[in-house]
Length: 255
Length: 219
Image (cartoon, rainbow over all chains, first blue to last red):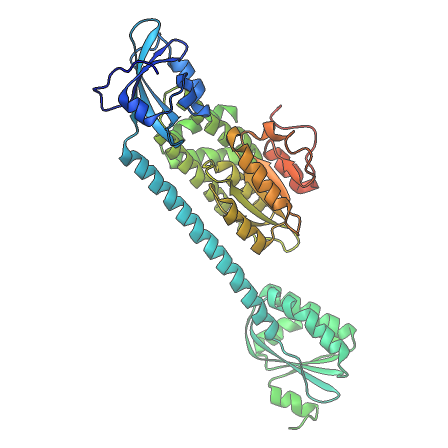
């Protein structure tokens, strides 16, 4: 063990030579750092070049910020205060970065990670909501068989392309498997119909027309009926009734 | 773009997010996002590291620069029309190995995946294996991206990769980061692992499922 010096200082201090070999170390240095032969051995890999570059006789009275390993292998950020006694020997004081500084940096990292967690939770929540909305959409156009010839599909809520897409496949399959030739879409409980929703509806009605179905649309107001007319509905066996009741009457469906 | 790097570094070190983000905006008007990431933001952050080595700035300055760039990448994601993930693209989980605090690279990768309209979950840096493991088992991502900046984290990376390779659903693992070029030989035996040297590699992988022999970084 090398001779100790600067034992009066409340800080770790080393005396090193030009090749970074440790010649002396203070009591504090013995307490906090491993008894390595080379000073570079306690320096973090990513700080070694910095130490090699700045710990040179031509840079006297320097302060260098580096990461070093403590005796407990903890990586800490320190300032090295370096003074050269001669061309060959230097004294190095190791001053740990202010605790307050490290605390603030840790707090910042924690804040960032909390934002990250919140972001993640929001995303998971959003995905769960999307699943619920999809289930909701699927339920908004139930297929009801009224008798051998007539089926009823009451539509609920606002109609957009997403909703049409959600219900389309199931609906077409049920209609295909059912014996009914007449199908009534009841729009009484429908709110707004978006432009894309209208396009989706058009495609759905076209498919039904190809399947040879007679389609009645019940419970639409005048403006909606007008938008349907744009699609040249006359080609598709489409009938409008102002209410579900009149639609049912016209098909002789009684309760 | 080269001429922007110095100014950009100056702005982020000064914590001047307005100027920095204006500069990125004008770069975005002329270049692709990958180019802006690769040729402006990444070199600027390497420059920050060099300035620290040159004893000109402190770690506190580095943290400030990182926070500003973090914000800029986030706002770039927000600026583009928020398109939803396409149902037929994959799911990707991104995270940094434990004790790895460098995360800007991961953020840039996450941003690119969003551009390709993947379903993205970015978990941030410094994740214990158990944490990533639980998330990956629950969510079953098609791709797991790990980032490594420091060479001595390699043993952790191998441990993570070996764990994920045992998953039944066989996720692909992408590894990027500053030391990535040195890792290529380590993972050459793994056929589910791709080492990405740059974001060009990433784009290429997303588009073709392969990483070619012609590497970025040589340009």
